[in-house]
Length: 303
Image (cartoon, rainbow, N blue to C red; front, side, top):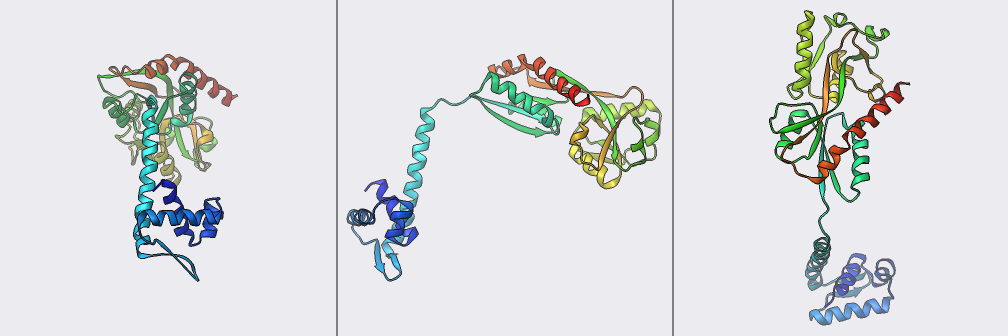
């Protein structure tokens, strides 16, 4: 008994016709297919199929044989694939994480560097909040991450950019007519603040509000930029958030720079100090090139 016998048998059983199976699925002559089925029945020792006015029908033995034939073909394919994988050396992998929302700007350029330098590696991508990225780096689940600098003694950070905070609000808000917004102008507005899933940004905002002396009390917390934009659009609230490209905001939400000296927050590439991956070393060696390309693109969009 050969695998081709099983394939022929399954095709005939599924089509219910020797002629259709021969022409449609197996691309062989009908007499040849009939002979293969007879050879299979001889090998098994029982009749598997019978002819009727309705075409080919499986006998009780044929129905029992069909399930095992399908399983045998599946296992044969799995064995072939396993052998092929074993014969090929495993491709090196690199796990890269992004603070939610930052992959829009940084992922394409990061991938360009990795593909240019190491075209034969597998890259996995994840998008999370910054504390979770730090935890993944500590546990070795990520090799590098674009994130906020979190408190973790074993992590090393390379700053890639410093982002000013801006005011975000609905596009039909009264402040939309201004080119810049003074902080005092949002007193009394429904105010959103990053939740504890973004502790670095939250601390910067809390310190900025405290130094201002203004009575601005957060009404709701938001976990990330997507959550914030959704809340602004649905509730009419305002928020202080790190600058986000206006062309990526929905039409219903806009941003304006803060008048005066705005607070800032760093975006960094973080990695574990004990990570000896040669891919990580190459990636880190190209960080300056990466930041230059992103800065150039940002300036081009502004002109």
